[in-house]
Image (cartoon, rainbow, N blue to C red; front, side):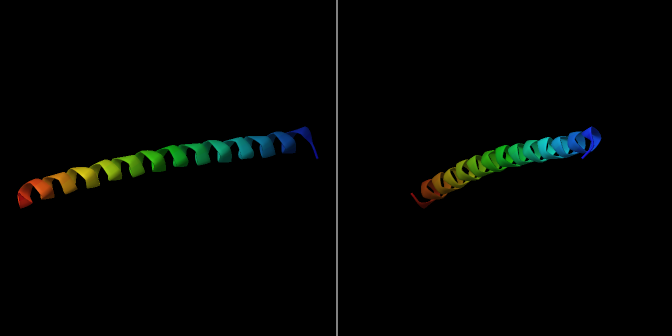
Length: 50
């Protein structure tokens, strides 16, 4: 395997790891945001029922 092939493989692997990290971070933020939204909606429904 030539050094160029090795460099390409390493670059591809690094890009994949970075993409996975970004996706995980975004998914975490979305999950947290959804939880907050559900809590807000539940609170407003409870106040309306009173």
